[in-house]
Length: 169
Image (cartoon, rainbow, N blue to C red):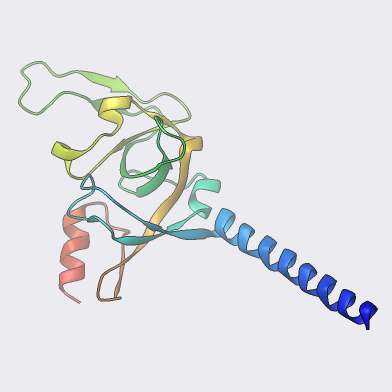
């Protein structure tokens, strides 16, 4: 009897470890659902929107300009940020406001990306902390789950195109 119960308990522990490893690999290498908070990506992604962030693009170095990514905050490693990729390594980025008389530029160093929120007036992004290392990118947002449980693909390069396509459904 004891041996039977011990065998069942060890079998349960074995299955738990197996499924835990499968879940870890899925979240680490395939993707995860993320709840976005804050106004920096409005109107594309609003406060408390749920998005799916896939990880394969990051591992295959397939992040492109216009992609929305989830990255670790350069200020707080416990916090994730959701921003749009504006520049890749080697790109020249205008860092001055449109109203500035003299324009200032910076180059994105190798191994870094330039991130900005769609809501430029209310976003803390690379304009504040500079380019971030590619290694801080957690994944590329490819799907948004809206409040009425419809999904919207986010492959467009501009938030207006994504919004128009969503409204035409």
